[in-house]
Length: 97
Image 1 (cartoon, helix red, strand yellow):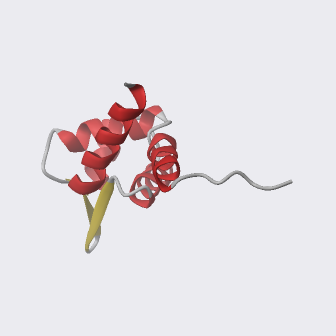
Image 2 (cartoon, helix red, strand yellow):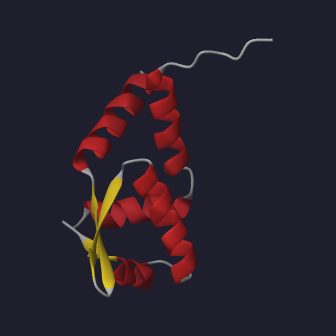
């Protein structure tokens, strides 16, 4: 049996959908969209989750290319990665048309 050949577009769309498939990650994106950048400790104050859980969610969003992090000891500053966010919005819009 052969494996299906998924297109690059299908793989990218699935990656974005997976990254946004948890309410905490949607909330993180909403928080970041309302400001230029935010430190991870500040996000913890806005969400009812542990720092370790927040770190996992931030990693998932970063891995999908939706956010970027900049290490400013002892904190990490996160921002929306505009290129990834714009691509995700475009791809999802096309998918739902």
